[in-house]
Figure 1 (cartoon, rainbow, N blue to C red):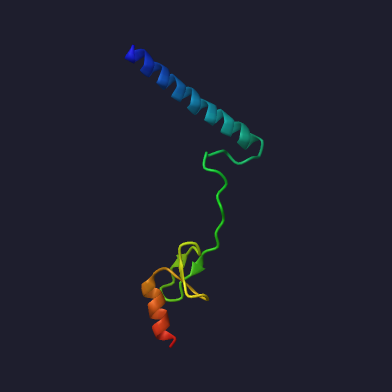
Figure 2: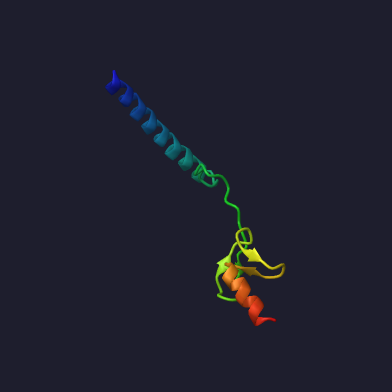
Length: 83
């Protein structure tokens, strides 16, 4: 009984994998982007930390209102330099 259940589960997984491959092939041949299941990625403009030069996302950066920093250490160093 358990062996039969495992066979059915494996069969369903194989069918799902084949379905996704065929669906992506059809989408690509039609000129659409393949469906990776994640959704459309969002483009984000990265901003350069003026102290160390690291590029950071505005969503995760530390800001002083004008500049964006990768860490509090860089923000504090920038404040020290420009006082």
